[in-house]
Image (cartoon, rainbow, N blue to C red; front, side):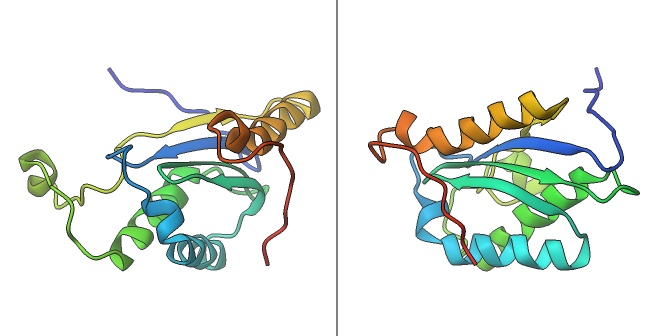
Length: 147
């Protein structure tokens, strides 16, 4: 069975990406490398980063693609691989991953959702802002702009 993804040029998408080992804190420990990977991909495959939250083992973000482009899959693959290439290899790698020349950092799949309208946009922005509260990292939600 082939999974069908939304395929809208210029669309805005919400994503959740998880580490393979949900007990690791790699994303916050290596945040500068994650930011570097996002910035590199934005430079070669432009997109607008509408909102983002990075937690120790997963991240949520919204991106808006250029009006001529619907290729979010390449962007996500490059962000994940760019981050992985900067990380010292010390994770356990399954035979399946070895045979595909994959690291064991990320879950293979990710969650994506095409934003349908302004209400959907606001709902997902609020979800992103509230996520650190939900996981007990902070007492209240707030938005902060990182340079």
